Length: 196
Image (cartoon, rainbow, N blue to C red; front, side, top):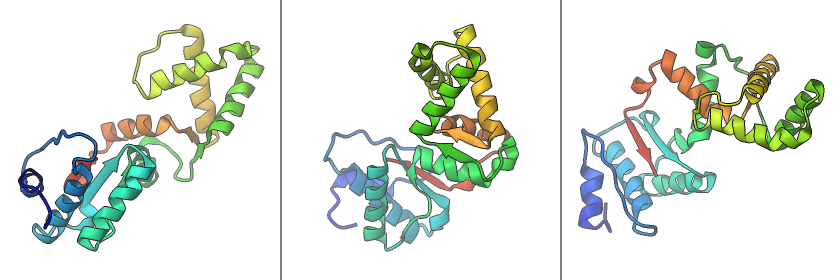
């Protein structure tokens, strides 16, 4: 744990209760997190499979995985974005929420085609597609309640058709993980969760 300032070392050695670190860009948060993992592995003998490190972007996920490996010599299995970790957990526990394990994720182009076909079959003006995509996002990612009867009916059919085809769209990942957490307690899956 060389080259840590006193505040960073205090964060690294903190254990037993949650801690939040608020600091500006370039202040060493990621470095501190990597050394925190090293401390958990080497000083507290936690299993690498019981540590989860989450990030918001793929680039940050790659960076934190590399930094953890550099300082600890261990490549963690559970490092990634919220969405990538959700995907792994959903595949593992799919049966708990009646998802087929072999579900696929629609990319943006496939999602657009899927929605256009739904609108065409329903005879709805394609000008409403962007409204509908925003509605999907509000319902799935922002957890907003139904607000538009027409769009809600389309939304329900959209979700039904996706599931019938063993498909999820990107916005489904966090929603389905939330559903999973309501029926399967995942708290005992990890001993330590870090977010960068």
